[in-house]
Image 1: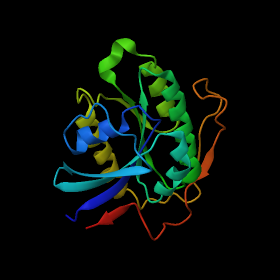
Image 2: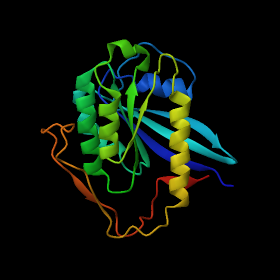
Image 3: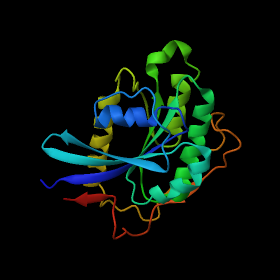
Image 4: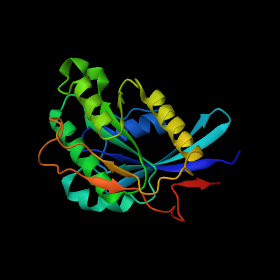
Amino acid sequence: MKNLSAKVLVLGDQGVGKTSLVMRYSRKIFVETSTPTIGAAYFEAIEEVGDQKLKLKIWDTAGQERFKSMIPMYYRNSKAALIVFDITDSDSFVAAQKWATELHQHIEDKLILFLIGNKSDLGRSRKVKQSEANAYAEMIGGHFREVSAYSNEGISEMFLDLCVKLLHEKLNSRRNTIGQVTTWPTNDSLVSSQYPPIEFKENEAEKNTCCFTFT
C-alpha cells in the first residue's frame, strides 16, 4: 500500500500544553516549560495502522492573542484538528469554543475534530467537567479525549484513534456529499453567547488539492 500523509492542526490558547502534547507524541519526551510558539511549529510523526503507514504533518499553532490573526493561513488543506484546553482552567475551555467556531468559519471541507482536555494528571484541580466537555464535543460533531502530556496518559491512544479515523475517512472520501449542510446547535447552554452560531456547507465538488497525499 502507498503511504499516506495528512495535515493536522493543533489549536488552543497559550499555556494549555499544546507543544508539550505534540512533543510527547512525536519525540517521546516531556518538556515542562517551553518558549511560546511564534506563528506555528511543525512536527512529523508516523503511525502504523495495520499494514498502512500514515504520516501526520502536525502544525502546532501559537495561542497568544497577538498571533491569532496569523493562524488562518495554516488552515488550508487540513484534514484534522485538535483543539486543546486545560482541564484546570475553565477560561481555556471557553476559549476552545471560540477556536472551534473560528475553525469552521474558515474551513468548508469535512474535518475530523478532537476536543482535547490536557493535564488529566491534575484531576483534583479540575475546573471543567468531563460531561460538559464531552457534550460540547458531540454537539459540534467532534470527539472528546482527556490526556496528560506530563504523564503520557492517553496520548498514544488518542493519536492512534485519530489515525484510524483519518484512514477510515480516506476510504470513504468518494461518498457523495453534494448539498450536505451541517448546522451547529445554538441553543445549548454550553456555548457562550459571545460566539455566534455557524453553518457551513460541504464543497459541491472535490477540490484538486486534498489533505491526503500519496508518497
